[in-house]
Image (spheres, rainbow, N blue to C red):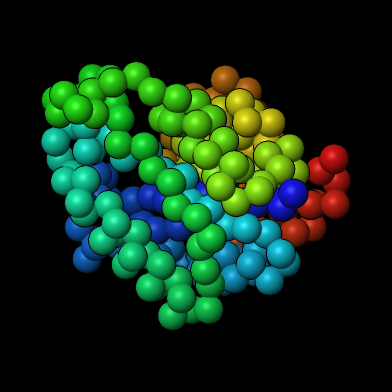
Length: 189
């Protein structure tokens, strides 16, 4: 079984713009590509897990999601970093697009995306990490039995107060999170 670092997308890897709906809006946060490259080099799978309720809200066409993913991957590849998997949840029970306005087991903090990735990629969730800028990312880590790291980028500063339980580590940014993971990964049992 492999170890992975599951990364939230907006506010963790790329700049938070609020309902990102076009590939041209993707801008990597400083140090994000280098951090992912370090995790790649240490043998971690790096997997993006992102709630995209904008699809259910009618703000983002689902057809845009793969285009946004491809743009993100291209920018990371240019910096020598790679993503091993990309999972998203288009659902939101309060949405306006009936097809996606449902409760599901993939919307963070539910662990559906992580379970799917674990099955698809042979990941041991108990040996893995979840990094994000929202309380739901911290709860996702807990719900999956993984180590939860919160970054202060994106919504991290204001979301910290909303956490039902503290993250295992609070990082300034993804670079800081990756360094902490690499330093402490031997402790995960």
